Structures are given as structure tokens and as C-alpha cells.
Length: 437
Image (cartoon, rainbow, N blue to C red; front, side, top):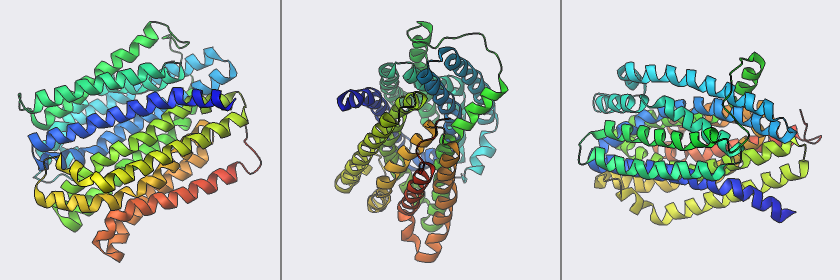
């Protein structure tokens, strides 16, 4: 029995982790190309844009996670028609959201860049990246949506293939647009957009070939279902949005405390951190279908088994990342083409920052477990505290109380406290057993 469950979990988790790792490998390579082809100010500018990209991704996750969670539970109950209705409702919702974001990113790039903290050194780079990226937001939104629903519809391998292929194309286009064609940061943004569009078409094949149970069908607006999608997706959206809050706070604090060298160093740290987060995100995305289906089938034993094994996998991954950064952090930083002063600064700060991954690896799985079992209230509380209240307060106040260097430990503190909150919430919500709604 345990072997069967282990194989089932790894069937979903392994492709999701590999897909996320490939996605963030190309993100790192993107940073390496920008750093070497445009310069460290171009690298810093991309880091300033990241909060907007994370907000975009958070909104996509709001709909994708919310809809796919409902679909998984309905599959577990044997309600295929209801699962398909959730799919079509999510499809229409994400189309509208992506269209609005496209208008904002293309036509309001300069004021948006200033809001993100760009000064005269960075504003042109930031504006170029925003425009180049935003024109591809609709296919990028569908790629995110289809990845989640494809996994829930029995095609986790296709989702992995789509990400691997698009990542390889992105790396090639990064090189082509930045070096031979000299398009700078706008070239990097366009390369990302094209690659995600290709991933969208790959995932589209699952639904057009009718390999699973989800189909494109006539859309019927259902207000109650839409509310459920947004409610189920809010916890993950807050989690993703909180990353942008942290990045904005860290950018402002680093600029205030250390000047441009702080922002440029943090941009390198953020790229490397994104690769680490890929492991936790991959495990969380992979466990979501099996947790949701187990919940829909009211199988408590499977729920607990999948949750415990996911926590173990994620924590071991975070431990491996911390050890790797400790021994090879300096070599990784050199790849970004930064000057010797920035290199020394980033190499010193990165091991301090990376300790937060140990706690984050567990809280990420806790969050996914809670929203996959309809514990939206608990997940919202967890993600608001760890991702909006604690992080912004600690990043702002700790350097003023304990000195500038404590800034690089802020991640450790707020994720550590978030871990304790998560443990308390799960214990409180299940003190009388799991409630099946």
C-alpha cells in the first residue's frame, strides 16, 4: 500500500519539481545573460521589475490553483461534469485578468517602473522589460492555467515537457536577442514571452486531443462557482503576492542601507533564491492533485501520508540547497558578470539569506495542504502573516534596531515565525479530525 502511494506521489511530484527547476534554471540563465550582456544595472533593473511579475503570477495562481483545486476534489467525488465546469470558468476568468494586465504593462510602463522603485539609473531598463514581457501575458496566463489543469487531468509528464522545452528555447532566445541582436533587457523579456507562448501551445494539445476528461465546452457563468474558485485560490495568490512584497521591501531597504551595490547584490541573491524555491513549489504543485483527490474521496490515511512525505522531500531539498550555497555560492555569483566589489558583497550576504529556505520548505507544503483540503481561512491567515505582515515589519524595523547587516537574516526570522504559526494552525484545525466539506 505504501509503495503504491509513494509511486503515485512521485508520479506527480517528480515532473512538477523537474519542471520548476528547469523554469528557474532558465530564469538564472536569463540573469546571467543580462548581467554579462547588459551590465549589473540591467540586472538590478530586472530585479526591480520582479514584484510586478510576481503580482501577475499571483493573479494567475489565484485562478489556476483555485480552479484546479475544485477540479481535483470533484474528480475525487466522481463528478467529471462539475470538474469541467470549473475548468471552463477558470479559463474565462484568467483571460479577462490577463487582458487587463497587458494594458497596464504596455501602456503604463514608466509610471509603473517609478512605483517599483526605479530611479533614473534603472527606469529605461525597467520600462523596456515591462513592455516586452506584457505583450505576451495572455498566452503566458493560459500556459499557467493549462499546466495546473493538465496535471489534475492525468498529464503531469506533458506539463514537465512543456516547461523543459520552453526553457531550452528561452535560453537560446536570450542569447540571440541580448548578444547578436543587442536588444538588451527588452530582448530578455521577449524571449521569456515567446517561450511561454510555445509552452501554452504544447499544453493546449492535451485538451484539443481529448486525452483526459477536461474539454473545451460552452461557458455558462455561475456566480457561486466563480466565488469558490477565487476563495480557493486566494491563499496561493497571497503567498505569491507576498514574494513581491518581500522583494519590494528588500529592494528599498538594500538601496537605503547599502546603495546600488545592495540592490545589485540582492538581484543576484534573488535569482539564486528563485531556483531554491523551485523545489518547494514543485513539490507543492505535484502534491496538490493527489491531496485534492484524496480529500474528495474522504481518505484520511492517504491525506496524511502524502502530506508527511511531501514535507520530508521539500525539507531535504532545502537542506541540500543551503549546503550547496555554503560551498559554491561564490562560484555561482561569478556567473552573473558582476564586478569584484558586488561579487564580494553578494557572496558574503547569500549564505545568511539562504538559511530561511529551511523553514520556507515546510511552510510552503503546509500552505498547499491547507488550501487543497478546503482550509482556506487557515491558509489565508498563514500567508498573510508570513508573507505580508511579518516580512515587511522585520525588513523595515530590524535594520533600524540591530544594524544594517541583520537585513540579510530577515528572511530567516519571518519564515521561522511563519513555520510556528503554520504548525499551530494545522493542529488547531484538525484537533477533532479532518473535516470534509
